[in-house]
Image 1 (cartoon, rainbow, N blue to C red):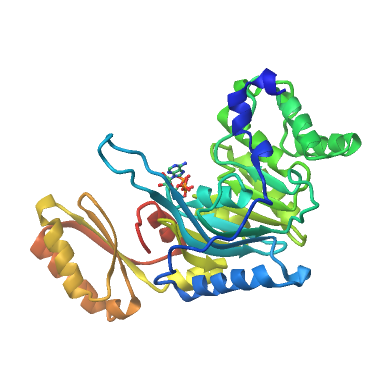
Image 2: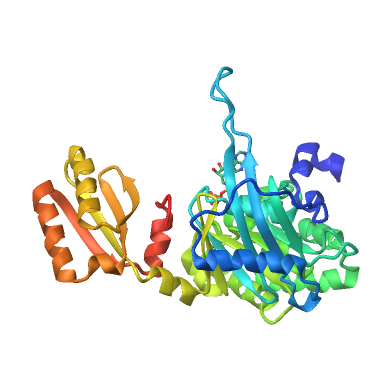
Length: 381
Ligand SMILES: Nc1ncnc2c1ncn2[C@@H]1O[C@H](COP(=O)(O)OP(=O)(O)OP(=O)(O)O)[C@@H](O)[C@H]1O
C-alpha cells in the first residue's frame, strides 16, 4: 500500500503518525494572566486529574498547560524568524461521557490543540494525558477526524472502510457489521465503489468522519467535521456522536466554528481566542457569563472621525471593552453597570450620533448567538 499510494500521501496519514505515548511534561514558559474564574477552575481540575490515582475519576482527555509555538517564516534573508504562538498555556479536561466543544475564530488555536492531543504535533510545553493505557493499541484508542481530509484519492470508499477497520484491529466479522451499520446510517451504498477523488467535498468529509468513528474508539477528536456537509449529513453526524459518547466511558473533543453545532450536541463549551482559553462551561454557564453584557455597535460615516468616536466612547463609558474595529464599524462590550439607566445611555449615544455624524448605532444584550457572531471578529473577549 505504501508504494501504491506514494510516500507523500502516506506521510500525511493520521493513522500511522499518532503516538499517544510519547508525551513528557515540559515546564510552561507563560504564566496564566487575567484568567476568569471558570478557566482557572478548569486549570486546577486538569492539574488535579493528572495526579489522581483513582481510575474511575480520571477524565478521558487531560490537557494541562499546553503551549505551542511554531517557527514563523522569514520575510527576507535579513529579517528574523518570528515565532507564532498558537496555544498559550491552556488547560482543560474531557470527562467520561462528555462532548466538549472547542469554539473560536480562525487562528484561535483549536486545530493546534487537537493535534497536540492526538500526538501528531508535540507541545512546546505542557502535558497531555488520555485514558489510553500503555498496553492499548495505539491506533484503536483514537478516532481522529482531522481538519483536512486525509484520504487516498485513488482508493474507493469501501477500500477506505476496510483498511481503517483492519488498522483499528477489528476482526473480519466485527468489521463487516460495523461498516454495514455506518453505510446504512450515512446512506453510503451508492458511493461504496466510487474512488475518493470523484466524491463531492461533502461526501469526502462524511467519509473522513465515518472513518474516525469506525472501531468505537474511546477518544474522539473531531476537527470541524461538518465543514461542507449537507444539513441531513450533519444531523446524522450529530446523532451518531451523541449516541456513541453519552453514558459511556468515552469522550469527544469537537472543534467547530458553529455555535449552533456546539449548542446542539456539546455538554460543555470552551472558547479559545488568540491561543488562550477565555471561557469554559455549560451552555447555561456561557449564557449567564456572557449574557450579562451589552454589545454596542457603531458605524461611522466619515473614516476620519473613527478615532474621535472611539475616544468619546471610552470617555462616556469608563468600563467599556473594545472588541473590534473593522474599517468604520466599531464594536464594544459594555457591562451592565455602564449601561443603566438605559435612558441616560441612549441620551449619550444620541449625542455621539449627532456630534460625530454616525451612520447608525445599536445597543443590544449580548446573546449567545451574538457571541458566535463576535467570534469572527474578536481579538479578545
Ligand atoms: N504548522 C504551522 N506553522 C506555523 N504556524 C502555524 C502552523 N499551524 C498553525 N499555525 C498558526 O497557528 C495559529 C493557530 O492555528 P490553528 O490552525 O491551530 O487555529 P484554528 O483555531 O484551528 O483556526 P481555523 O479554525 O482557521 O482552523 C494560526 O495563526 C496559524 O497560522
